[in-house]
Amino acid sequence: MTRLAIDGGEPLRTQPFPSWPQWDGAERSAVLGVLESGQWWSLRGHQVRDLEAEFAAYQDAHYAVAVTNGSAALEVCLRAAGIDWGDEVITSPYTFIATASACLLVGAIPLFTDILPDTWNMDPSQIEALISPRTKAIMPVHIGGEPVDMDAVMAIARKHNLLVIEDACQAHGAVYKGTKVGAIGDMGCFSFQASKNITGGEGGMIVSNSEEWADRCWSVHNVGRQRGKAWYHHPVVASNYRMTEWPAAVLRVQLKRIEEQTEQRAASAKYLTQVLQQVPGLQPTTLPADTTRSANHLFRFWYQPAAFDGKPASEFIRAMNAEGIPVTPGYPEPLGATEAIMNRIAVMCRKLGLAVPEQPDCPVAREVGVNGLWLHQSVMLGSREDMDQIAAAAFKIQQAWGSAAN
Image 1: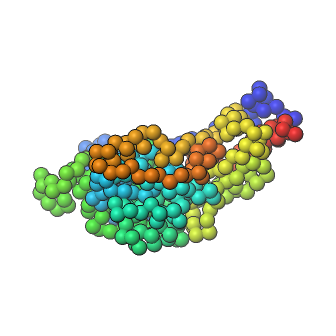
Image 2: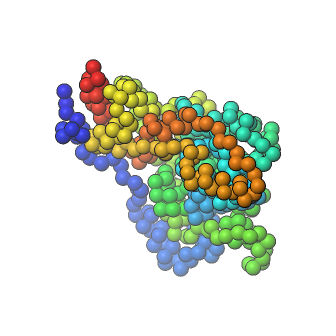
């Protein structure tokens, strides 16, 4: 039997997967153009305005507001919606901490549904049980770029007169029933942080099909000013979340490549899902029938220890990494079990004289935290041969450990 690399054998793969970010002379020219223009500020240049128009059109939205990062985008939307101390926002427990911390930073309390085992997205059937008189919004998270069941979310939101703020920070180009995510709800948020499917190093975007919400977000991101009013007219107390011209120029170039890259990621993910069927104990998440296209920011899959001699996911990750495959763990625990989040909720409730809301148990999210694994989006830009090597490495490990169990 072939010796595993983790045990001193030869690794199955030694060449790197596609690097990220990807760039060429177009980004160099864009940055140089900003430098030489002398207009580095978005309020005097045109790069941010052009990016807003181009990104909105790409995401099937009428309006867009560029901000400093995806975390800020979430916070700006909440502030624009008037969500404040003691209000509640229902969201997913399996997401980056910024989804919850944005709520806490405006004084709102996040409440968490569990997630679906097939997609790792929020379970819409659990939303209504969490709605109270203080609930103001639902914040669905398109985890890994896979759209949430937005029909179900929107139906509940309209029934209870709640806002929907989409956390689409990982979902550039994802399509739900023929429409790109982000502008299906009232507002949607995107991130351009270094790992994202298009990147300016940092940066974020808010999209909407409502001029009113876009104007409110613009005001919040621009120190409380109002469009068309005097420069020192500040009817809203807010901060400065404006993007500069530098990342906007880079992102405009990145945006020209996103469709081709998104199709490549989708093709790779589909093929890898097929070839992993030969590996007992690995189960990729599924793409629901009503999802036209995932952005595949993360290729997500279940690891089943029983098929690998009971070895924990951490050992499988080490073994895959040794074989040259960059598998990583995902979020380690539900946000409703994160000490910083729960401590802050408790402090806020105490100061407001409110009972600390009981967070629902999230057994699926807890299990995904233990046995849910990722491959990042740049891996999905690889070839079919690259996907074959991922499956081959996993099979090599499974055969070695499975045989040991027998």
